[in-house]
Amino acid sequence: GKVKLFGEYGGYGPGEQSRDFVSVEDVVKVNLYFLDHPEISGIFNLGSGRAQPFNDVAHAVANAMRKIDGANPASLEELVKEKTIEYIPFPEALKGKYQCFTQADLTKLRAAGYAEPFLNVEQGVSRYIAWLSANTDFLASPL
Image (cartoon, rainbow, N blue to C red; front, side, top):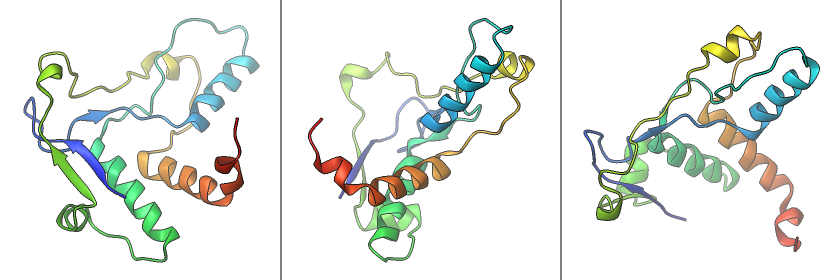
């Protein structure tokens, strides 16, 4: 497989545009926390609280797939060199409209008593790919 990421834009290097990625597992845990604490209400930001670049996501996915194939992990530089990860020009249609950096402010969530740590991209991707690998029949069956 191949991953294509945006090249340099907005002062960010190739693949360095960042998001606060959050795993579904963590979203469920936060929802269950509030279900167990009905006395707490409000609007809360939800994320990991730390932005990670798209390079981290591509790197984690590529290495999780390499692990399944029995190959050793590769560095980001190696993945770019072997063209597993490629950078494409930033689309003109997105210029001036694209947020290069987002990160959730968890202050209110933490003040509400939620203290559990969140998975980072590498942990979340690794768990998800492992689940997909163990549940191939799920992917093959129509919904």
